[in-house]
Image (cartoon, rainbow, N blue to C red):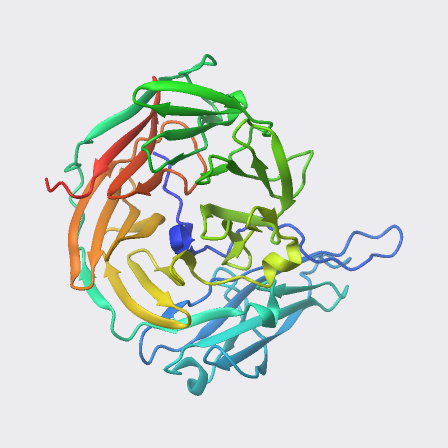
Amino acid sequence: MRRPSIRSLAGGAAGIVAGVIGGIALTSISAAVPPPGSRPATLDAAHTPPVLTLPGEPARLRYAVVCTPREDGQPCQGSGEIYARAGQRGDFRRFTLQRGDDSAQGRYFVDLPPEIASSPDGFSYYAVLRDEGTGATATVPSGGASAPQRSFPLGDAVEVDLGTHPFGRVRGRDERTLAAPWGSAVGRVGLSGSRELGFVGPSSFDVGADGAVNVLDQVNGRVERWLHGRSSATALAVSGGLADLAVEADGTFDVLEPPNRATPAPVLRKFGRDGVLQWAQRLSDRTWSKLAAGAAGPVVQQEPSEQWLPAAERGAPLDRAAQAARGRSGRPVGNGREVIVERLGAGELRLAETAGNTVVRGWRITSATPLGEVQLAEPDGGRLVVVAKTYTEERAEFLVLVLSRFGLERRFAVDALEWAESAPLARFRLEGSSLYQLGSTPAGAFVDRFDLEVSR
């Protein structure tokens, strides 16, 4: 069995960040101009921010720095500074990164002093990293002082202990809203790949307020729309890679595509209801985890900033600098609020809803069974709906949690039917009080609906 991914989302669905720094394949985000005939100077970084902290918890900030190897074959000489402050406003203090031996967690680190780490208003910071040999530099997050990484105290969190997950007790669907066999005709969905390398099916989907289900059938270069059992298709000029989809209230499509041979950077494309491309905009950072619709336009969880960055506002794309300058730790969910999610180790999730720079409610979830990626974390009225993968070496299921300010209101599990690959954090959508799941089998792809108001 393929082991589940342990990359989570921030806000992701809503602010969810957890990364494995060791072994990451990194591309360049900052480069110095090399002398003729030499290898290009590159520098990249990875960092897992402590976005939600408990009282008295120390703050060690770790960074993996990857840069051009030296001519003698030895590792590059990285260095850098952290600029940190107590709270979310005011002047930053400078701290020099130290080099340690723990490459798996991030070889370069800083321990923030208690007066910053234990501030009742949290703390904020950014890093400036460099390769001493070439002069290449990188700022993480990319907005620097304009949009620093923000950490908030989780002092009054509701504690939820899930115990050991009972596999095999999954809840059945309330409705299968679509079942599409593999193929190219309308009403079918495309499939690519092989038994040896794995198969790829529809990469993402979205659900409208009218219950219409839109599936990104990138293999066939289109979006298919299902409503009341009938399907229609709109052609889109997409690359065919694993992309994410968001359908705006006016029926236009946002498609977030990964790099490819023609476009070596991730790009957000805006298509009209007729499928005509309106604009395309490169993302600020080197890669992404999730696309979501924001109040003013699409927002993207980007890496290595590990923030949610707006990609457009009021229909117009934002350039890379404007995206970077507006990054936030949480996913915006309306009414000036954001949802932040942090995954720690194999069995702990921390979640918070913030207003401005204040935590208004929070939860700390622990589990004896490992928790993997967080597919979704979104408010539903006064509740928060969370979908996370839970797994062992032998099996996996998705765990659905409905949280209130009093604790765990409801929980159930659904099968992880993932025969064909999709975008990593695009298998669930919440519309009203209904949860939708995109899945696949050897026969085709489907979308199931689960009504959260129904107890089973």
